[in-house]
Image (cartoon, rainbow, N blue to C red; front, top):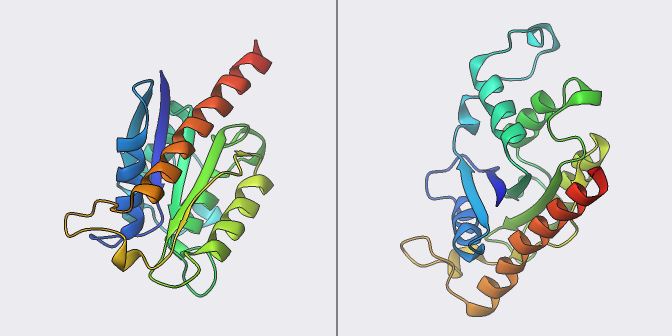
Length: 186
């Protein structure tokens, strides 16, 4: 069973990106256990002076959630053509120490949803760059949901069948990257 941790870069209660992760969880096959990380708001601003152990409890919880997952699926909105600050902050915490951070060699994928016409593709590119820099194994497949305010129903479910199918391939590709990683490690 592949354990995928979903991390939404949006703190908003009715976030399209969180809804996108829920849709990915529904689309994941029976061999995937999907956990949605919902405590991003608790992670304090990164400060190297606070990096010493023990770390803040919220940071320890984030690191443990990443460590316990076989892979991570990030869903990012786009703020000013880049990654939301709270998501980047959480990744900064998780990236320390660089050589042993919980994302190093871990398969990760990035999806996004935005009310704009580009679906947060710039934010996806920025996030992939950051994840590569800290040693994550970035799966290139993803989905960028444009005009997200028209793609989800009132209950937050992704409506268009073609988008659901495209999104469904992402957890499958991430699970394949996990299996490949396990074969290489064996």
